[in-house]
Amino acid sequence: MTTEQIVRPGRTGPGREFEDFTVGERFTSAPRAVTAEDLAAFTALSGDDHPLHAEGGILQGPFGIAVAMGLMQTLGLHGEAVRGLLDTHWSYRAPIRVGDVLRLELAIVRCRRTRGGTRGVVTRHMRLVDDAGRTVQEGTTSALVDARGTGPDAVGRAFGTVAWAEALVAALTPEFAEHVASWDGAIGLRAGEDEVHLRIYRGRVIEVAPRAARGATFVVEADEPTWLELATGADLTRFAMTGRIGMRGDGYEYLRLTRVLHLIVAAAREIA
Image 1 (spheres, rainbow, N blue to C red):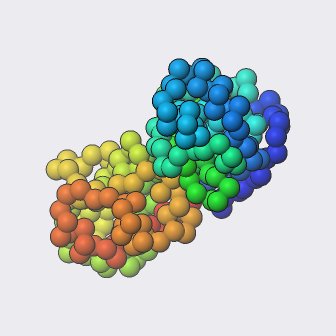
Image 2: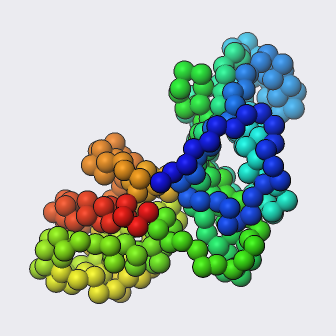
Image 3: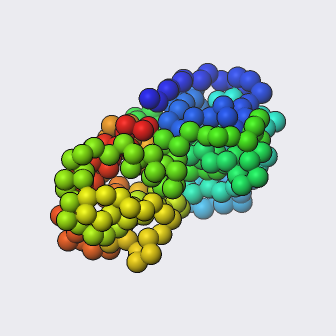
């Protein structure tokens, strides 16, 4: 299950360590109004005085991610345990204008312990939304966070990893075996940068590995937020039709095994 919190202005605590984060947690910040003073200050800071901004009342694109980072600070998630920002992948969906009222919607979409075990990487999907409910900017950021211990960690939402896929295979129903009773191939599942292959032969998954020996027959791929939504109830077919789920490889086999993919998603929900 997911949890959701609405957090009001001001830092709410010293922050969290790695074990305090759970994939699926959701947070919403208090609103923040965009003012003419914001535009003037950000223009002075950035040096970007294009007429689009000065005359049109449209804020510079990087203003949005700066505000998103600031609103994230008010959620109380960052503290002394955070060692740094590792990456940011960001998209600009709509202009931000003077007079808009923005809020941040944040979801934890990945928690991965580092190889040494004493720290972890926490990935957040961040959506900056205006007062009409429209997404103006969104993306993911990952932070390195100190851990209290060295594990083990839950695998039910570690999408795209071998441990997740092994748990998924254990949750598959007999119907899965019926649908692949005469099939010989491999299905790849990709979540962000992680990919795992299920090698299937005559009704059984005989190997789970980062790469099947002969490669995957086809790979189903999506970002971590999409996998999180699938694992918590979203419709696979709708996501595929709207482009949130992609495929590479043998398109014929992908379509022929549509029911199998639905059973895989059902197993992912079971272990999540």
